[in-house]
Each structure stands twice: as structure tokens, then as C-alpha cells.
Image 1 (spheres, rainbow, N blue to C red):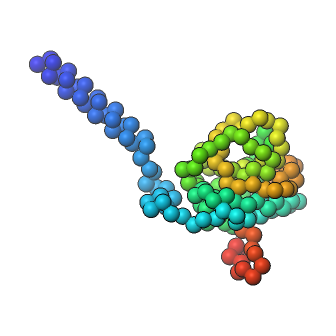
Image 2: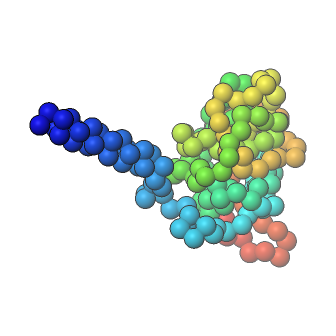
Image 3: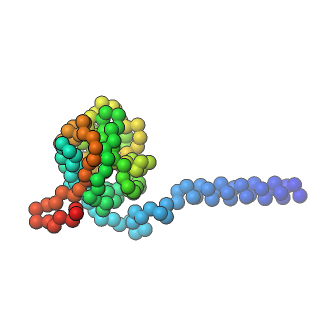
Length: 170
């Protein structure tokens, strides 16, 4: 009898552990990242403006699902947050997809996403070898990121409107 009770108890523990492991990898049903069919609006090469009181930086987005999620949110007005004298952060109103690979490596001008925030970051200085958190790359600013070093307050993110294209940023 003891063996049966012990076996049943162990069996229930194994089922519980397996169920918990399966739950960890399950997608979050509240996230709408289009992963149902694997498709999303491609935004690689799309440019966005980061506008502060004294600076304007043009960022070219990569072709990731997270970048597409960000582009769909634009325009945005966010508050700049200083990040250890090498990056400016901005907290998003909602999370982006976090299915892409992450990195801690960065260069001046890199633009990325930290899903624990959910925060954006643009790196304006290379005083550190790497970031202390994993970041999903969203794009890169070819120039001008250094201008953000002393910026504070509000930043506006909006899509760059190409000549002949209708402005949908309003």
C-alpha cells in the first residue's frame, strides 16, 4: 500500500513538473505579435526621427518583428531617461515582440529594445565594452547620436515621410 501511495505521489510530482516546464515556453496569449502565422509588416530600411528640443537623429530600422511593432506605434512622445552616461532610454507604453535574438554588444548609434522595461535605448557613447542587459537590436543611426548626450525631457519618435508619400504621423 505504501508503495502505491508513494508511486502515485511521485507520478503527480512528475506530471506537475512537466506541466510547469511546458508552461514556461508557452506564448503569452496577451501579446499580439502576429506569431500565429509568422507574418508581420516588414519595416527594414524604414527611417524614423528622434526629435528632442535641441537634436534630431535619423534611425534606420532593421527588419525585425520588434522594429515592426515599434513602427506600428508611431508617433510616440516619450520621456528621456539617462542610462549610465552612454545611452538614452525611453519607456514604451506597451511591450514589443521579444522573439528576436539579443546582444550586449553595441556601437554608438545603435538603437535597441529591452523588453523588461519595456524600454528603448539609443547609444551615444562607447565608454563600456557592453551593456549589462540583453538588448534586441532595432536599428542604427548613422550619425547624430552623440548629440543626445546632454538632452533631457521629451523626445518624439515619428516615421520619416518620403517625398511624395502621405504623412500618417498625425
